[in-house]
Image (cartoon, rainbow, N blue to C red; front, side, top):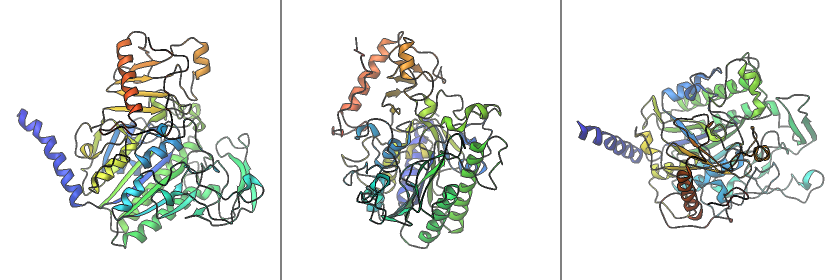
Length: 506
């Protein structure tokens, strides 16, 4: 009996790997929501008060990860990690996010998921919110001297995408224009914006906007583009990869009928219902196109929920976007970077699976690398582990550690149930912020046992000095090696410091 219990997971993994090779070229769609909390959908929160039936159906037909994390608790760095399979803090971006007019972050010679699948014969397409910078022509006049008549350079096309269609920053960051593979679709003809006081949910910064860029219609427009893309590419013999980073439910929170007021809670809950509804439309299109069985779909979020959702109002209805975890977007706490991850692939993943395997969104790279049977290279996917064992029902992958990063550049390291936050406070937006934590005389770091203390309330830093040192040594090793995967050391793009200012190890 013990032999059977031992050999069964091995056989399941072997079967899935065989299935992956037999169907080595599934179509791949990666949907990245923006500021969606782990508590905002029913598959990862049984107490969710927002109706998300399409995502629940996706989970019922696939696998749901309950211990999945972004590499950062804010969007630009997480997007870097998703596409490169590399922790964001190894790049030049040490903290914060880019704006809507920032230059490109990922150099052309940095390996990405786009390059990986393009080499495997895929048509690669990005549709949505890029927020990794591209290079506007600066020979114009007015707002940031952008000349919209000139081509945009160093966009997603240098990062492995044959075509792209989207906007540069978040939907509350100007300029508000569509760019279609290097060309602005319509020149801005006015300046527009909505003040926070005027609309605390639907605000967006003032800036240039094109006549074909309608804020309320951006989300449905991107799904319309995606549905059309799926139907078009399904007729081709070549497999496709659609990277679909959404601008929602991030601000501006602008639900449209029939979702507006549908939740009877607030506009954020309405907008969440709209995201779910559009996912239903996408799945309907995949089935209608006849490619449902061999299309691998991921759904996740770039970080935890933002306080723009109005937590107090949602709480009146018993809804918690962080599902009992501490903190939210921007924080080093679990609510900042623990996110939903649902994966559906009818031809190779058994329906109705749930797993507590520790995973990071950087793991997309190695997963697709293994599915397409490509050899690992020293300079690609340095912090990426394949999810295929979890797809096969194994309780873990090869990942044993997780390094998290907050908006202010603070670190946390996780091993097993132990998590060490290298900050005195949230390192983000929730209380206590760092300055306040230091004024209160809180310890310079926080050690939690997540199995016993899901909400990160009992700081064991002073009681478990041996565990603190063990995790600091492990962090030092993975930072200095330039990778957390096996292999030769590679350089980071900058000098990386992780100890809190003024802290000296004893």
